[in-house]
Length: 511
Image (cartoon, rainbow, N blue to C red; front, side, top):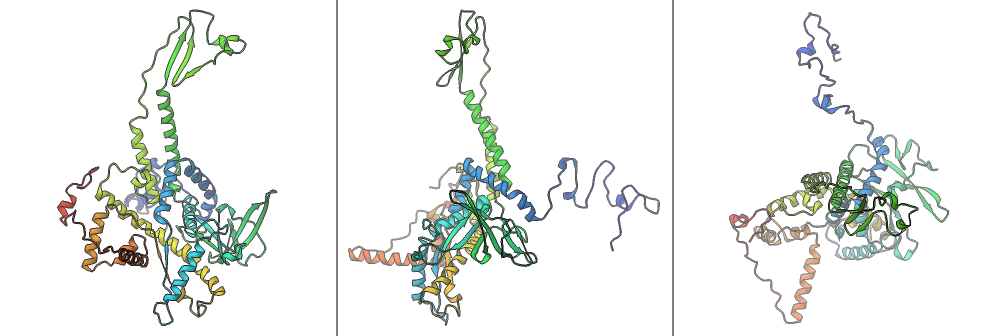
């Protein structure tokens, strides 16, 4: 057992100063409450006592308020709206491209099954939404948007009313559709927290409790949905986490301050741009007070007249006014403050500053390339999470229903894996300089350290489609007597490092 430390200021048994004082205890007047400086309470931190409760309890108290604030900022604060659009565009784009990798029992490619699976799944994707309006790729975009604004998305497997569309459809729900009402059918040794029924020993979700309002009478309907029929996606930040938190959380207050500051600066700039004029009269009885209600002359004109950006004010005789020099608005610090705030928002979302702000004035090829490379690495976990927790579970559920109604998947229930194998090609990152990057890719392919498939996949395209398009182009050219031979590679940029970087500077394009 560890020995108990001596109280502060108490002498040791030998009559000297306490062991704590000899070990470096702070002098009188300084408060030291812990062995780590990060846990101490100096004057600069004030009463900094953050909540250290269970993570799910913190989410339960604050998630609804954060969702409401982020939604409001996305609607009314342009940088937040652009941030969501950028994350959706770069993470999802037009959707992850699908390619079946079904095999025969001996492991060789099953080309007929691959072709049939791809054709039928792509046909189902056209009306994957339960309403029949949204494409499967649009549902991916909606799920990412929900994850940005709310911190989570909730997708339920449903059945369309029109059986001609198949047996499976997808329905997206708002986080507010989860209810904590206790419904019949709750499992033993389980509890319900914010609409999620989970095992109290392991934290495994068992069911989701939904609520919705429908009809003209606004009736409330509640039901219990088994967890196997729900896809609940969010970024897991803590062990045992049950709900998601928006990535905008650290930037909410800073964005609100920037919005208020911008509004104040714009209002001051508008006021500073107006002219103020005064009308004088030789009649002592004529003044601003006599132009109110009860005066027939007041009906002829307003108390204050506005003409374009001119305000006219009436004064008494022998009254004068002095003008204050107009201030320059917005001030010099406005641009620096906006840049700093946008950088903080970009840091919270792992977005490059130039993408969030649309400001490309201070970057060149090297800085832009480095920024895009970092951004591409930040996108990897987003795309991986979308594939593992959204796309693949949907495809596997669809393939189960397909095996129940179709006969082109022999032995499916004995070995699902050989039919469920698939490759999902995420959205590619556009090249900063296609000429430079293309030359580097060709050199890598010729050196044998890169394959054409890797280059095509990196651009978010399907290699098989590229080969088919090239073959179709060759046949089309041959039918019209045109030579479709590939031309020589451009040598506009010689393979000289000094030449490639000689003209790089901020705002200067390479020659």
